[in-house]
Image (cartoon, rainbow over the protein chains, first blue to last red):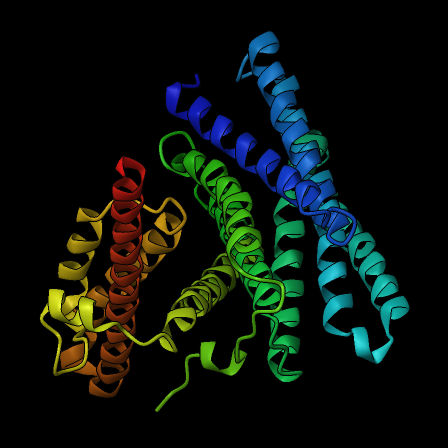
Length: 233
Length: 136
């Protein structure tokens, strides 16, 4: 059963997502950051869909569970589009966009095949298990892709503060979600009282962090990324 | 097994991203010089901002009217400072070199709080000036 805090988190998340879209539209940057705007819009629609499912079918219903996990996976695929955009921005001067797109599509397909292979033996609960498995693996692929991107940013000495903060916020989002999914698989007993709070909080983080970056970090702001690294002395 | 590996790797990467994100926020304030006014108010006129000054500075920040655009970054840096303080307490006896780095990071957090205070004081003065002008 959902309480007022759940609804509050949904509402704040929804407003932050819409806020990012409205901000990008108002600054005429929606086309430039189209994957981000589109992702945020879809995320807002999914939030509305989740609310509809809870109201009409109940929080414990199979409809809600399937809607939650499948839309989560679809949003992850959209998020890969955002990551590809970040890769293209980082490697813009090298002209390797075509290869980046190809590699990303291959990775998504491999993740789906791998997830199917992992649960293939568990045929009795195949569909239910599959959505959780693919969710965990998608998030982990997201972590790896963002980490590689961060490595490329450091290596290429990318200095655009806005891009750096957008990528770091994305890294926090993916790693926190991947960790939560893995903990769910490892300790299912922690789900009802503890782990269930993590996905909405992490879901709230990304639109808030991106809204902050777009609103407060100027397009031409520069930062030396090497200063952000923790180095052994 | 796969879930355990994902959990450990993700947690380690999360920590690295979180630290880098907080440092990117701190970096924005590093090149800003503190005004004489804020040095006078905080009593740090002739020495640099100390690692333990953060909470005191944050209390002063909260006394000033909110600008409305710095709350989230203050909260993020506050969380980072709390994490550093806990790590510092744990690492001091066992890893002094790490403790030196943590101290430096905490100083950066305090400096960030001092810059935030400076901005809020300027904002308060602007508000005050505007009110006086409106009355006239």
